[in-house]
Image (cartoon, rainbow, N blue to C red; front, side, top):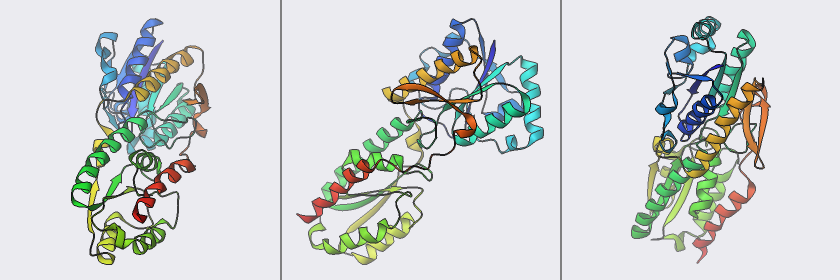
Length: 327
């Protein structure tokens, strides 16, 4: 068997660990792996390179995507998909492993349906917003990176008695924000899944503003929050509570980078190995994931963007920080 592997969408720490596992597992079974450069665009443009075991040695500890990753608007067009399929046939690719999020899964599902080329998906996205798995590759690292940044911000907040509104990534999912806030002991968290948070937050500020002067306050803000923009929130706080020194910080793409934590490396390696084994057993059209510690296969069409909010206990832990204002 000759397998093509690609990374699609935003990069996520652990993608390289998944690539390594795919290549080494394939070699173990006598199969070959072709790396497709920069996602589905690489299939359309016929940009590939053989991935040999020696090329992926030690790759698990590195962030990013060794073979490149990209979003491909062109892959939405049927003619482009047919061109990609022709290049697969020219290269002798008998199956594809697609590492990415819900958009990548949709592309893989349509591609297999139209061309008959078997596809298996691995959940590579920091947002942790994909059905079919409890955790996605890169999520744990993104949370750890955000937590380390917030811990550093807390040092300066304590030194100067400042309020910091810290924006974290996650698109329209609040999982990174909720987990970071709970771990950091933040005083509030704003996520898109929970409405009407801002009025309650402002009311709490108003009630305890006398006790908040010169006290460090950390508010974690999810980038997908739509109730109020981060800049508008900061402006509102500064206007309503002029005695407070309110600052804003956007962590941005640094959450995508850096060495993956152990949990992401293990998850990625486990899923990468299972992808090759599943294809060798004739399984395809599936997204792979973990539920309660067990490997699970879910049809790609069902691996949509997860709508469930973060667990309630995370929000309850974050709300404990509010109690500090009362003393």
